[in-house]
Structure formats: structure tokens, C-alpha cells
Amino acid sequence: MASHEGFVLWFTGLSGAGKSTLANRLVQEFNVRGYKVELLDGDEVRTNLSKGLGFSKEDRDTNIRRIGWVARVLARNGVIAITAAISPYAEVRDEIRRQVEEEGRAKFVEAYAYAPLEALVERDVKGLYKKALAGEIANFTGVSDPYEAPEHPEFVACTAEESVETSAERLLAFLTEQGLINA
Amino acid sequence: MASHEGFVLWFTGLSGAGKSTLANRLVQEFNVRGYKVELLDGDEVRTNLSKGLGFSKEDRDTNIRRIGWVARVLARNGVIAITAAISPYAEVRDEIRRQVEEEGRAKFVEAYAYAPLEALVERDVKGLYKKALAGEIANFTGVSDPYEAPEHPEFVACTAEESVETSAERLLAFLTEQGLINA
Image (cartoon, rainbow over all chains, first blue to last red; front, side, top):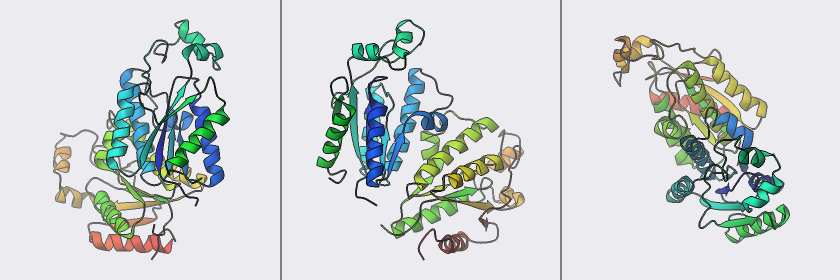
């Protein structure tokens, strides 16, 4: 088994900002290296943790807390736990960070996938912004629901300006510099 | 780090049959050996996975499936994941076993903590059977709710007849024989 620490790599950002793309790029790299890595994102989380939850603040918070707990348990057992949920509320993200840090068995790295809303609306890969702006989707983060940007994230990927490859390289360099993964 | 495989050790059995006691005894032993072990039981699961769920069949199944998924993800990353929920329904236990086995990255060991109902009613450590028999607790497994005993568990602890120490020793011997832990 290749050498790395267990840590939580917590992506946050608006829909379409590139969280999952960057997360998947990292997973690919870590798999090549033979690292223990789990991506908590998409269908697996929706099926296994979030079924029955909606998009109210309470339900969103519950979802994020559950993901946070699973990520923490994985990380304290030496796994790289990557999450890629929008996770719009700073309070819940900070609560999870605090729990990880107080436990002291793993690091917490917040990675902000940032692109200006206008860029996301223009790109609109899934056509969701168009629907949200037309009022067809309620509680859509960034349009009809708040997004609280992280104040001190460990890493920011400016996805409107740099390629996935560049963001991934910068992030890998950061993780190496922090001693979380081998060069 | 000491040598062991990742596997799911799934305790099942009636309330008071000794699941948590035996599970905690194993955790203690694995901690001494420096193994990676997580016990999914009690408060941590209730707070982080099960909040809001009740005791209907549907809610119980959801709870068990969530625990099963977390256990599977841990085990496939080399952790010994021990669960100690009543998990009354054979179908859901077998579903989790199938998912673990089909994935092929970890073993699934079902451990049945068995004691005759009469012995549990007589012992009644938490006074729950008395209340359940008086009709004060609805959906109480074994009294007013079904318990489907495993047909082919890998291990049975006869907790009315043998001490925790004896059950633990037998179980450790079984796990060693299976090549899941070192002697």
C-alpha cells in the first residue's frame, strides 16, 4: 500500500462549479497510486445515506452531517475521504471540520470550487440554472437558496479560469506540501 | 499496524442477548492488538445515521441498510467493521451480505447472539421486556415485533450458557481459522 495519511478532502461550491469533476480526477490519481480513497458523492450517497431527504435547510444539514460523519470515520482509519456535495452552509461545514480536528486522528482540507454565478449560468451543463431562474426548481443554491462561501478554505480552484488538470496539479502539490500524500 | 483483513462482523440477536457486550469485548481485544476497528452501535449510530427514524419495518430496514453500507465501505478499506444492531429481518441482513460478497473486497461474518426469550425476560437488564410484555412498548422485537433468526450464521454465541469470555475466545479462534485475523 502506497504512503498517505487519512484525511477529509471536502469540496464545496455551487452546482456546476466543478466539484465532482475535480474530485473524480483526484480519485483517479489516487487509485493509480494505490491509495485508499473513497468518494462520497452522487448516487451512492443518495441511495445509501440521503434517501427521503429533501432540500429544506434542515434536510440539507442532515445530509451534510451524515456525509461528514462517514468521511470522519473513514479518515480516522487511514482512508482519503473525498466529498463533493454543494454543502452550502458554513456552519455545518465548520462543525464537521471541528469534529475532525478535535478528534485529532485526521486532517480536514476544505477545497472551494469557485466560478462566478454568471459563468455557471452561461455554461449550465445540466440546464438546471435555466430552470431555477425560471422558477421551476425551488431551493436552488445560488439562485433561490443561499450559498455561504468558505472564508478560509485550504484550497481554491478557480474553475472558470483554470483547467481541471491545472487545479488537480495544484491541489496535489498542496496535499504533498502538507505531508498528507507522498510526492 | 498489526495484520488483519477488512471484514464485516455483523451481530444480530434480540435485545439483551449480548450483542453489544460481545462486540465491545472484541473491540477491546482488537484495540490491544493495534487493529483498525470501528463499532457501529449505540449512540454514535443513533446520532449520526438514524436520527428521525422510528421502529416501523420500513424505518428499521432503512437504519440497517445505512449501517450496512457504512460497514461495507469501511471493510473494503481494510477496517474491521463491527455492527451490533438487533437487525431483526433476514432479508435485509442477507441483502447486505450479498452486497459485501458480490463486491468481493471483504468478507461478511454473521454472528448470532442467542439466548432463549424466557432467559432474556427473566434477566431483563434494562427492564424493557417487562414494559413490552405489559404493552407499554410498541414494536418490541421478540415480543410484539418479529425476529427472524439467521439460518446459516457463521458463528453462534449461546449467551445463556457460556460466558462472554468463552464466546469471545471461540469467535477469535473462528476469525483466526478463517484467516481474517492473525493468531
